[in-house]
Length: 93
Image 1 (spheres, rainbow, N blue to C red):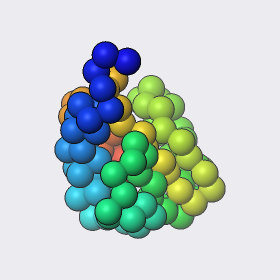
Image 2 (spheres, one colour; image 1 turned 180 degrees about the vertical axis):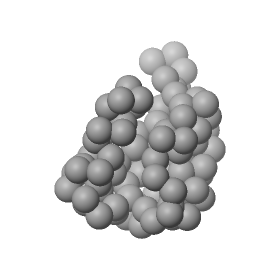
Image 3 (cartoon, rainbow, N blue to C red; image 1 turned 45 degrees about the horizontal axis):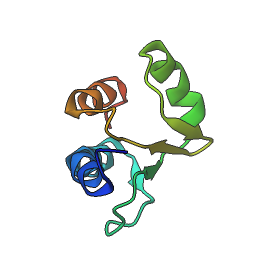
Image 4 (cartoon, one colour; image 1 turned 90 degrees about the vertical axis):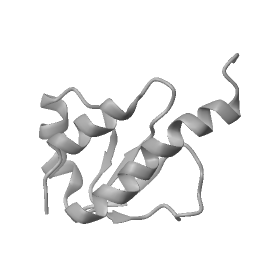
């Protein structure tokens, strides 16, 4: 509660920007509008749950997967190292 919404938003902004920049290069199609500054970002990825769940589980990385989508919700508990770790385990296009 003491951190404040503005500080949380400022903290997650570069984390989400890194995902927006890198994931499309790997075949992940953005579903979240670029102007959205909310706490989650969603990407379409064919067979996401089937293909990504084993990889992410083995790496102990928690994101929300659906049949054809992946949602990431970075917050104050995450840093750029977490984003880079996620990017390291995800498939490259």
